[in-house]
Image (cartoon, rainbow, N blue to C red; front, top):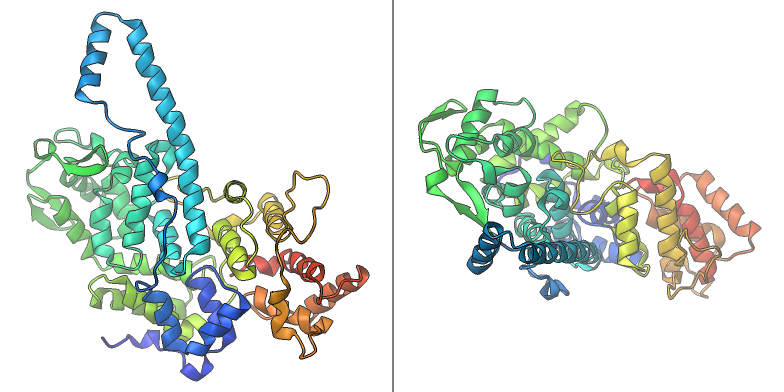
Length: 500
């Protein structure tokens, strides 16, 4: 399939370690200097294919067998009959027993939800398929759904696996799966959408937030008619179901087309609109290439146009688009380095993968992500996280710095004194690229190397001097583990470390 001119590839001769680091940061969550060098050695095409065509790379999932899909479940026929009889006979003891059982299940489910959050964060940290997890995170924020409304941890886990299955797959197939997903149906009240009593929530967000963009290519009447098309789509226990007796099979006119339009036809009509690939590709561009505030510049709009054309030509397959983006000269242009503010999850996972720190306590990391504004599986609303500059304020910056110190040293903000900087973490491998044949690490070379490996862009000379002065004042050398960790604490406190 020929590429649109706007997606012109970077010449292979220009793909170096800095490009490989940029690729790892954006198509995943970064990597160690050794991983960066290994990727650079593959050359541009093989490096991109290794990240995008990840299916042969196995990942042994751990812990998912522990998740119980039946903590929250519909009552059995016998339980239902018992409750009906208890209400009729005013049997308070039986009704209280059912209330206690419901409360116990809800408490157990909240605990399982925390375990699911930890499982996903651990997966992002460990997976050899980083783009799979990065795109799962993207779709979770795009098709935003939150546990507080769902109150069913298995449905959130089930939806997360669905996003993973379609992470770099077919967008059209994913949209069809989303409108049948129990978590989404519950979140947007489509279980209450039935013939004669349409609920517009899912139809509205499907067009406004998920496919076309607010006010682009549809009318309020299209939403009303779309809600009728989605009637009867509900869920039973853990499966999406279609109840024909609750479906409005009458004539509808949506986006200029008339007929007995059902859910599949409704989705097809949306996907056929030119606004759809433009909207999705703009969101992908801001997530993967450049999230500068305001309207996109002309060259950025042209690039998104090329992405959109390729998405249409590939019949909604995402993998060709992602591969073209990561291969392009535009993606690797210096203007698109350090052009995205790290989300809290990106900050956490990249720090662990980049420096190879201990994971410490997953519950602490998830709590920190929440404090920084990104509670996994619990976005603030149906729009998801705003991202960009909304990630940064005085409070979140303080938490970000404390979190990085915690990962590097093991010290929690609650601790009164510093613990040993070792904490089972030997950071000296991070300066191997600046190490001389005699094993020494010259201060200037070592600091410059650490900055290069840590930041999305080349460090300013004054940063090197300032860090060296701090190291000299504490009489620390980069030949010692304590010295390397101290330098990393200083580097991760820099404003530019917040950029990806």
